[in-house]
Image (cartoon, rainbow over all chains, first blue to last red; front, side, top):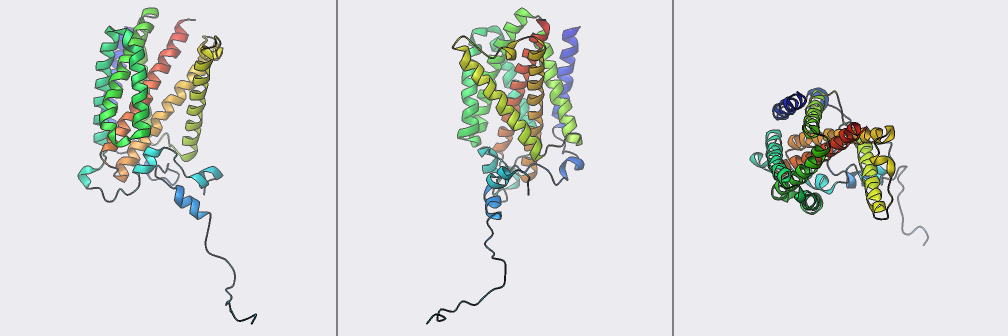
Length: 67
Length: 246
């Protein structure tokens, strides 16, 4: 009885996996902002923290000011 | 921006196979891209090979240890050397792990008859129920979720390695193998973490198919699912043995 129950459970679960696995996940799962980003964001995030823009008013640099 | 400064500095994924392959997918033709169908079919192929190996291991239990060692080496080769060759290495991995699992199950069955089919039923039961929870959006894996599961998995791995090394000196971490409340609680925790690793595998396959990764990543996705299933099966078997020995 024990063996029959667990055999049926295994076969039914495999059947579910084979069919459900091929269906796309629900919108609730896919359309989220907090999904795992599996790609490489190393360089992007690294450079994001090192901005090259200097804030403030621009000043003209004159080479002959000290001459 | 994440609250975790380490994530901001070093990026989201440390797995070289994942990070390498998610770049530059636009140049791949449609027919050469990863699909959900392909990943599921390849998982079915690996499972069939694993069952074939288990049949051999069941009849020749002495091959369990060599099978486990060769399977582990193949897993490391697939993960760290060349994921693009997963189509070649993953079937061999499944075969050797199958031999190992067959042998381990024979030893467990000799002590506790009927335990093997219970472990198989529970493993696939967890696989199907978690897949349903993932597809329907009941479980939503996030970066924090991944960080948590990854940390817990690494913690368990380190604990097992330390216990293995200590066993050479005649000692060990007792509670891991005990059948007391603490030992069973630990096994339940490990089964939980192994099961939640399946969710990460589902998300990787789903995202890979959506992004149109190269076709060989179907094998890699199926391989990662197999690695988790093998681990889950062993942990469920250990848990059932602890429960039956009380």
